[in-house]
Length: 189
Image 1 (cartoon, rainbow, N blue to C red):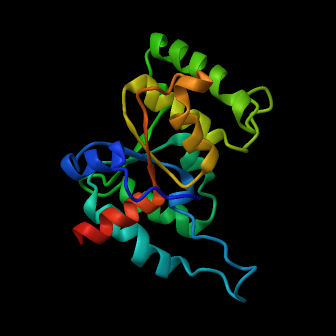
Image 2 (image 1 turned 120 degrees about the vertical axis):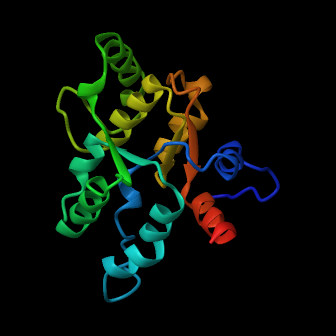
């Protein structure tokens, strides 16, 4: 992945000014990277939590995930961490639910999903898991007017960054990349 160090990314610039905006996360933010082909042991979740998740939850008060992403958190440690933040008082993690959409919003969401899914591995007829979370999340936040989607998935980022060119309907969504959040944490903590 090429990183442009000269251009200031709009999403990164805006989160420095507006930390209270809702940032919707992809599942890959909760899952430690798999480096098993390079080392003999997996990345420990407790270490991952301490150096990655806890700082993000400390700095950003309005994090969210879509219910389809929540369903992807199948390992107990991931689910427990998410639940702890969902049920905190006040909640530290919001869950976007399709049941909260009005009938007009559901129609709009369906039309955006129709534009997005052919560009992914997700097939709504099969309701397969491949990229379902990204498709459902992006369509939901586009309909609700939520502008930040944090991901480490190249295809999801491309759906946003090439929204006009590909006609995805995600023109008002901004991608926040993992390395931008690392930079933000470095500058603010």
